[in-house]
Image (cartoon, rainbow, N blue to C red; front, side):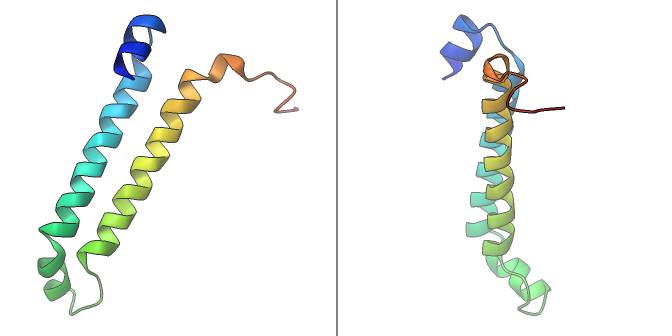
Length: 83
């Protein structure tokens, strides 16, 4: 994917989005596996690591959508978004 984005399309912004999505995914996995017990104890069993992991994974998917949108932005015509 990075080869296509950087070499063929000559785009930098989608690569930043991909790196941010990867970072958010890694943080979500760390929250799920390492912070689960700590968060659960600190919040009196109201929030656990899976909640934070789900929020971070949802953010990662949203950033992947932004990357996809920035790659395909030239293929969208004005007829898809009427004024």
